[in-house]
Length: 545
Image (cartoon, rainbow, N blue to C red):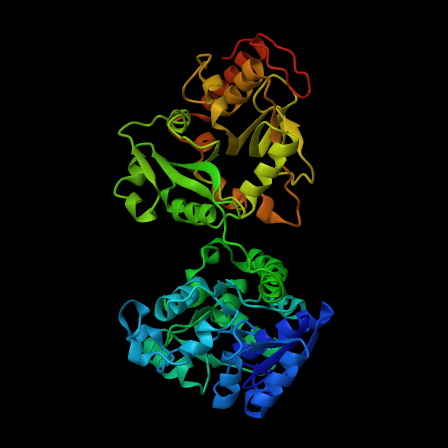
């Protein structure tokens, strides 16, 4: 069955709403893939149409369906699995608004169309909270969270063209007659807060985007739980500030706070083939399998950047191969005093009243009982396929893997070139040591402790690779970091999060000279111990002062 009957109340040539735009792009993707698509308005679709197209091998996708006749819906319900629902705005509720109920869960007498949802092959939700609320109310398991809306390349090009438009120091509000868009309340909010605003809106996409781009802030106070809300994402792609509430589905996605501006534009572009493939496989093949946890313990480190932890935890949970457990090692510092680490929901927390610096987390890793350890610096957020990338690399280049690799060109610490996310290598590269993020077998950890390092204050990255090579014949590698697929990268925000006054190399408590003198000593210690570097750097002796 590789034919689609697409049924909806309206199509984009009649109404340019978010659902209609999404449906139109999806139908285009089907057609470009060689799949026949026939579209019908709900008001013109009868039970006879459904029977005819089903017998002809069509799978029916139902989008907005307020105009669907009872016999038409019953014809679909009588044949479970022959149709899917593209859920846009809570049509399983009489009120169409779950936010009016505690925990978004309506009483049974407020739920409608339940059998229609139960018997669908798939219910495609637009966001994480959207999917959760459907499942909570209908007690069903056929819900798939697509986690993103759809934009065409042409639309994204328009957004990119206006990305750097000069902005007025005021707010924009979408001028809509649709009561669910709550324009009146949003206007009242701005007036109450003395926020100057301009009403915007146009059926011409470029005009609308240029209007949105002209204002520093986009304000939207939703009236109902929005399943996604495209305008919020368009505003973030245009580098606008936001004033809104949590009643927006897109905000519930783990990636939402990670991207903005051009990075968000590219992320949205990259998600389109993933969304289409998920839909196609769910309709024509097996439903996407739930993520299988890999035999990995992920260990995060907290010192002076606790504000990055939520983003890191979300990135780990969103891995295609998520870890079995997430641990957090907390080194004492005034910058993390009072931080609510429990709110992160990690599995284990090591609270320390001392700064164990870099080696402490490696000691904690000895307590793990998984095959692999994935360890991250506090400025490192991995792409969603990083663990998958590492596991695949282990099959071809088993060794200590990392997101940033260093190859020594000489005996001083700053004599190196880098691989990994800084260079975006397209194939696996052998390096001398790695940092920012490590991936290795737990059984290799004892090698780290075979020799006392020259200092506990520095150099754990090179000491681990040196001892693993010396005692276990284990090399160190950077997996592929292709420029066109950042989801494979071990660090997607390296420059944004890592270059600040809190970086150890910039620490005012330790002079720049002292920091690199310590690292020089670590390099010399490894070379003198027999470290075989990629560039065959020879051991040397010189005054470290």
